[in-house]
Length: 263
Ligand code: FES
Image 1 (cartoon, protein in one colour):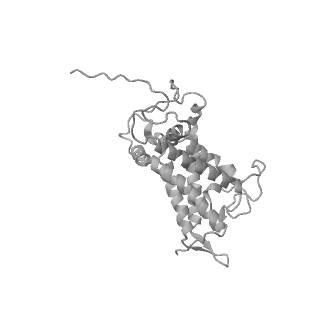
Image 2 (tube, rainbow, N blue to C red):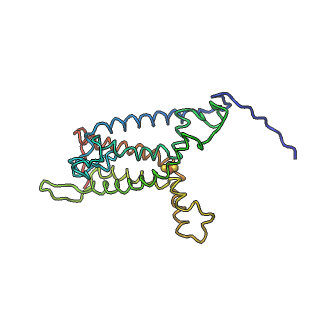
């Protein structure tokens, strides 16, 4: 059967025959990611209002040094510099997100238009992929994953502590405040994002040629795959909520918001 031959022509930068608003997601990603970066940087340098009673902001957790009951050390050991505690720990979750396969595809488009969008002319004629410096460094993602899993445990403990209120006599009682739920949802969303990571899926069984006869590996692979299918949604929801959790704790600490007790 005869087939038509379609000649493809290379388009100039930004040229396309697409008629939809293909640039809208890129502009949205640029605005949201820039806003998050600006807020997180500002919050990290504040070194104040990061805890309220038993609640600790995820931007400052683990709290390595300080007078707070959340702190791991009262006096900073020699190897911990005297800077805002957030600056000591944020490079790890930031590195995890920055090297995430999904975010890479997003900010390559949104921040340096390479490519600007599907079927839209690119700014260059060669494609090197991520095999060369500096983008080859993105392969460090799998190592950031190990740290991110550790952070999930720490944030889970923070959420658990969020349910224990101290009364006037110093005794602890179980209770539920809006803050308890905010911290818990933060861990749920971060878990959905982290446990659906492409690198974790590979770790769970992806490097095997076949999974039949490996029931544990197969189940783990399928669980990660299930979360991985919604990785984009988990990525945005967890990004938004981790910032909101910091805002919630900050505004309660500043006395602007009141933490309502449900139980
Ligand atoms: Fe997105 Fe690993 S690929 S967190």
